[in-house]
Length: 213
Image 1 (cartoon, helix red, strand yellow):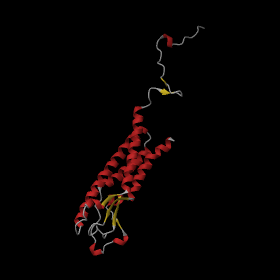
Image 2: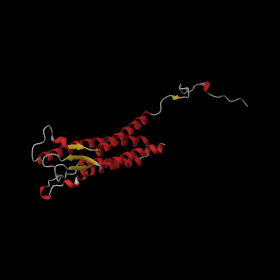
Image 3: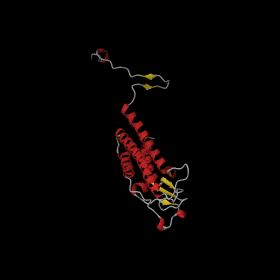
Image 4: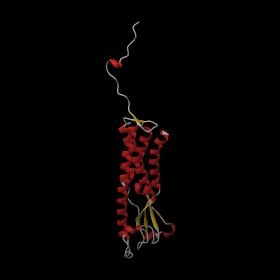
């Protein structure tokens, strides 16, 4: 059971890394003029990997603009997204390779928490960048009651990666706190009453006497 529980941390970190292949952000191109390579009615999808590496986002296949009308939709590699991937790799290595539970849990909790924070800040930064680019590419006024931010949506890949990191951080933090506190001074018996160890006796009463031979 202990070995199984130890596998949960690296599994959670690996899952967060795999979710970088899933959509993190989409741009609904119902905005006037579309966005990037997508015509109005199409959708541009950025995965976490696209954000980390500056990759080309996916666009709805039948909604591509003619080549001469396409605009840039590629973002520069985001340092915080790349940092999250590095933290995940380091976290997995520590979770698997460090034997001392107290050290392992403390370090993994810290790494997962930092990775979660970086992921949040990165997502907020990317939203701002995409909204600014979409605003620059508008060819007409937005529909009544709409704002540029209404066309940019966070997606499940980001949400589930963040959730995995938070769970890993909280689980390891709880384990680290238990190890730091150590076992309690009393132990519970079947009847529910605590039993406290008897104090050691000092002096002559505690010394056994041997019969004279």
